Image (cartoon, rainbow over all chains, first blue to last red):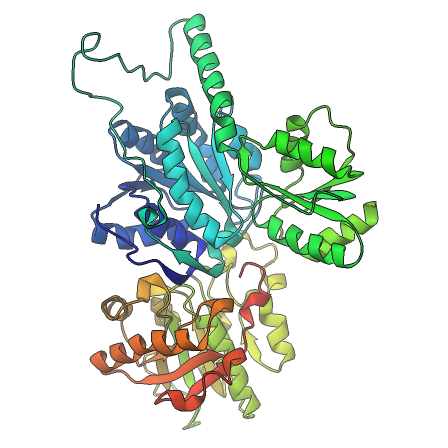
Length: 362
Length: 227
């Protein structure tokens, strides 16, 4: 496949633009999409760049189709992806569920906007529950929550690889601020960093006779009998739990002696990082913990941080009304540390917001 | 017939260009520069492409600095929902105002076409359409790419060299990356109006390094949350 980035270089870009370049660099062959702010420029840039690199694009009639066309394309062996937000993410839950059911290497970039419903076009972190556990399945998904432009580039590339390696639907969870912000980052060809891209392969129409040359491919999203479904769901759950330790990623700072642990994800963790530094400078022992993967969740790592710090309290800061908070509570069930929330749905959180909250609860 | 205010020397500039090329930042700096020269200045937020991500959060601050700003403030937009994406009558008739007019136009081709909606824009003897180019953005990081991009934009009267990497900009980058912009301008027969350089690099990038004026700019847009 034609090189897209060329020599590794510094560049100044918006988050949406980075998604496009990263998808090109990752060897994505086709994007299916339907417009919605704040992910529109992912499509805009893809449609400008794709023809130059022999890649394809289809704007479908709605998000449901965009998701299902990705499901179809990956079965045909095409590295395909989509991008959406808010109500579009809601509509795509049906195809995302199909990808869970059929173990399809679907990749979706989610740029969260305000909710419920059309909410705002601007920013939020209210698609955590939807992206991790949406649909009528068991949440067998891989969800990376990025915090910087460098991470958007790195994790879009990684997202395609884990999707094709492990065959669970994979999400890069950003937000409107990250989509529109502009920041310098280093862009590169994956192979120049020693990253081997997993080649796509057809899931259907394989050569050879079934039962003679190869096993049958069971790509199924509906079963006749309860017991058939039961076996499949249990198998998927087992597979997911087995690979989870290989997928889980997190970031932890200053937790060893912390009196209070501040947990956040995505762009809010930048404010949390600043807040921890400022609080420490003021003599308040704060620690920083950030799940990078929201699914699977670094629950053991968070339990370990609580244990080793001996922290008296935990603060969950998020631009939502408790979506991360609920996720954490279910993941660390049994821990007795009191958990407080700084919930600011649909608006940005800065270091001062977190510092003030910490001082009010310590 | 269109009738314009009779100031012969007034300045009317429209900043167009790629998304995140620096249009709003340079429009703000230009308006403040003219204000400092005791001109009467009107800054117009014409971004109807992405009206939720414009200089809107800075409107109040800029007004406190003495600029007349046409555009919705965050307070004005409160309650409008998606109808907040509108061209106000004040913006449509902005060229009828007295004084210098700086238009901050939405991005890309569709953004540039917003000028069609401004009454008298193309009849104005004063209007200069300035394309802002950051050659450190991958979409405009080579001579070919910039030329192709400028051709798409329609009428362009001059270019502004605004190559930078945000907080990671250094003098060498400014000097090297902007060379491409000068080559493009020469190829297309367009003037380079000025080179924009972060004021933090004032000492490292002296004006004489370029054959056109260097404007040292203060960055206001990071004051908008989403930047």
